[in-house]
Length: 213
Image 1 (cartoon, rainbow, N blue to C red):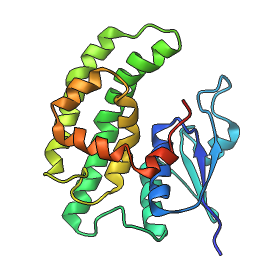
Image 2 (cartoon, rainbow, N blue to C red):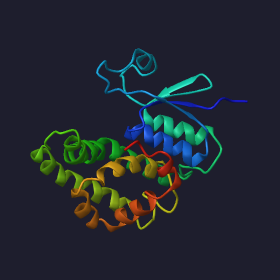
Image 3 (spheres, helix red, strand yellow):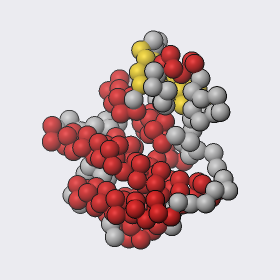
Image 4 (tube, rainbow, N blue to C red):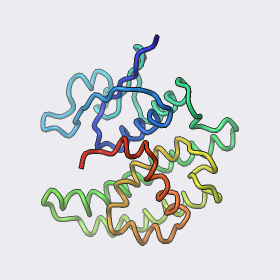
């Protein structure tokens, strides 16, 4: 009998939530071990033993230790029973990986840090938003959304008809991004992504992994 996997990270983390979504959608019981990398003392020593760069998430299953969210998500999909979250055909699988790369390389910092954090998170903490940073991010966000929308090819999910790791990787980013008022107009210009998010945001796994307010 194998043990339940352990995920190390913070509930507020985009990438921790992406892994949790994969676990939830596969129906895999797991334990979340909370770690706050933004604590005043910095990443705890126990995390650095698992992740030498001090980032989250880290993961362990039956003695197998892994870090990097994308690698963990793929392991979860391939190591556990449940609905497949990656296509078997080479071209469709490549599309999923392309979308995940776009999200990591271009969308994450723009949508989350440059727009959500500046417009929503910082004011909640009593800090003024950096308006110049937000304005500079809007064309980049528009480009990211347009590129993702063009790859959807008419499907209800980001990579076609079926839910994949691309959807689960994107959803935590959009959960934050859509809290910023700037997201409304940007999504109005991309109706396919807007419709995707309306459905994705209501999935039970999204409710189960919602970070504390």
